[in-house]
Length: 489
Image 1 (tube, rainbow, N blue to C red):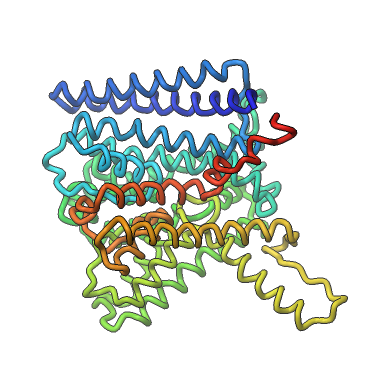
Image 2 (tube, rainbow, N blue to C red):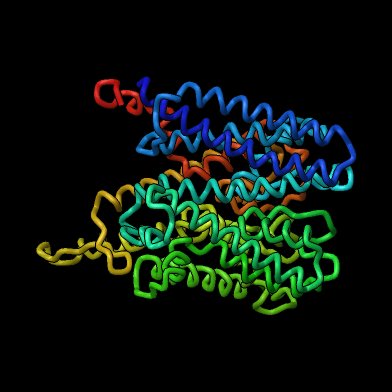
């Protein structure tokens, strides 16, 4: 037990120190752009708290090496995102004088790349605070990728067995562990996508800061709106052009980074990665067609608007789906968008939700079970993902995880019914938007701000649980986690 705590402390300490170092860039930005001492002092104080807490954790685990072996990987993810949410909220409180609960909601929304917000009066806050809110999405995106590499990939390696090892072909220092090669590779892809979209928008007439912040919101899947009357309002750039480019890069953000790995390494063979990409594209197209069919008005723009909304909700960016105009979105369309947000994109991408790969396995497993009932007993039937045959234990794990998502969503809806005065339709969309990290909602930021403290705590919990995929909380609450090998890890 002592060894487990020390390893967990070291993991958490290293993560918080990296978080603190990232904040140093924010301090530099504040010093260069802001004349108010309260702004720089606010970031300086946050850095001090972050590095101090990180060093305390590190001192507890100084005798251990970092480890993500279960259940440590899950527990570290839960502690890291929880502590970072609190630390990330400090600038909103000290600089923006926000209530703590609103600040925590903004921080969690950025770190989980959900994009729900109570922020509507941008002109009242320093630009550095808006930039900090935007940059939380980058930290959240990196968290998602590291969590996939260190935890999800290990537990669901039957999807990807062998494919992630392609990064070993890179000529990096031999002493660098393979897992860090993958993390660096994925981070390079993330930065590359942000850089490409930023460049496109700059060439189209946007300023560097506007282009960069919009690209971060798009590629990270957070979808935080910047100041302006409309999310696509970038000075000097046509809104239609912003929508077209955003559509493309939103779609790219939801693709599994395993696919990028294969293609960058010039491996074009059929594999689980290409299978995942196929399901991802079909899922988006099916959603767009269904939205088009259900729309009696066709929104006056034909199929494109529905394709945009399908990509937006599946990728988790949520552009165009915050404060939805109910004159355009019928109840049936809202239900489709909500379910698509709950499912999300591909495993290994930056979208939230259950993931389309897992939903496909659930559907295939149901089909196999039906065939077993009507087929001769000697016939062997297995669930396949691409060319891979998956065993029953793996399928049962996926089925259990999907059931946990559904149960958590129902609990979240029930708690919001108790803690808010919203109607059931608003609550359903809001709860699933938070749990699936798509951030879709029929409420404006002002209406979210007016939600009770209890309701905001429920939303905060749903966002974090959705991003870490629920399991870490169950491990934390389970006595079996602390009784391995007679109480020793």
